[in-house]
Structures are given as C-alpha cells and as structure tokens.
Image (cartoon, rainbow, N blue to C red; front, top):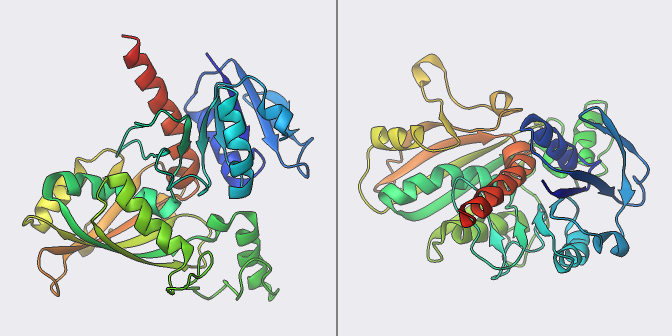
Length: 331
C-alpha cells in the first residue's frame, strides 16, 4: 500500500485518472488531490469518500508521497515534478515537459518498460500512444522503414476549452480556444507552428515514435488535424515495412497484439470509428490494405479514446507496470 497523489484532479484527464483508479481498483493507503489555486477547495467524491482538493504548492510537493499522477500543464510539471522526485516520489507526468529528455523514460506499457534511474516517467502524446501500440508488433515481426501519420483529433484533446468551442460553435458563438471555428470545420493546426512549417504536435509524434520504439533512424512524418468530434482520436497510419508482408499477415499480427482490437470487415461496413472507441480501453485498427504506390507499404486506420488510452489509462497502466517491476525485483 502506498501514498498516491493526483495533480490536476479537477481537469478532464485528472477526472479520468480517478475513474480509472476506481474501475481498476488500484490499491493505496492514502489519496491526495491537488489542483491550481482556482480549483482548490473543490469537493471530489471517490469510492464513497469526499476529498477536498488542495492547492499545489512547493510545501505540498515536499510531503511524503510514493506516486504522483501529474495531469497539469508543462510549466506546472517543470516546476513541481522535480520537487516531488526530490522528496522521494515517482512522478508519472502527462505533459510534454520531460518526454524528450534523455534520462526520462517515455512509456507505453504494451510497448516498452522503464529503464532510467530517474523517477519521473513521461506519458507520451495521446496520438503517439495509440499509434505505437499497433506499430510495435509490426516492428518486431517485420521491421519498420517509414511511418506517415495523418491524425483526426477530438476537441477533448484541448480540454474543457476545446469542448466548449465545439458546443458554442453550434450556437454561432465565436471560438475562444481555437483560432477559427471548429464546429463544422477541420483545423490543420494543433499546437504552435515551427519555422519548418510543422506544428509542435506533429514534431512530438515524429520524435516520440522514434524514442518509444527505439528506432532513432526511422523515417517519420505527420500532419495533425483537429476535427469536430468530442472524444477519441483517429489516426491514418501509412507504414513501410523492412521485410515483405501481406495484408493477412499484418492482420494476424495485430489481432494477437496486446491492447489491440482488429475491426476490419469492409464488406459489412465494419471498421474503427471514434464513437466505438470512446470509453473503451483498447486501440482499434482496421482498413488494413496495401499501398499500391510504394513497395511493401500499408495503410492502417486506428482509433482510441484520447482521454483514456491516450492519457489517463496509460498513466495508470504505467503505475501498474511499476508495481509489477518492483514485485519482480523482490522475488
């Protein structure tokens, strides 16, 4: 039994973390909930007990905790995650603050395991998580040469503000979160643009894929699009394999992969959709077909709940993975 804290407990992802902890019946001896000063004092009911959300401060970060589920912005993580770490806690951080640090593990439990001695562990980008889950078994079986992503990302990836822009847009209210209306629209713009024309979101997918799969020379590119869908991201994955493969072989490999559900019966209009993956833990794949324009290249359509597998669930799975690793070390 251990002392657990959730930072950002009143946000979309923080709330989902609590739901997952409840559903998975994760054991702990103490639970502490933190938020910004604005949300401090909020009452949250968890497993029939009422918790008062506390303001996150430097003094609070010095208290004795075993694990921290950190669901706050990058600036908050940069400030407080090292403080928790110095106080002896293991921090599972959902922001992008530490993902590409060399001594910080970037973990998707179906794909890799922590190796670093640091006790800050990074949760990857939501779209990267759902993409590497099916890519990993393909990499192991066939090898990867190139990956091209096009994402169709739900507004909940922008938190409550994104959901509000979608709902308000239907009423004709101007957006406050996005630079253009998202209702009845699609924005090829997630995060800020860089000098090379890529957005930071696109660069995250490129860099994180290489790091998680431990394939630094892999050719990866991405275009990330915000669409007027409330929950669940969709990703079109175009992948070139190193050794020859057939569609049937790829389908069989993915059907046997942990965390993957194959939905691929186009004759009966069966393929992954956002409405099916929402509130589900798995990554759904389908529309598996050969790309006739490039040798040994295939299309895979992939959907997953961005608040669950793309964030809260993956963080809790990392927590479970750490328990397993530490149990193994004591055998």
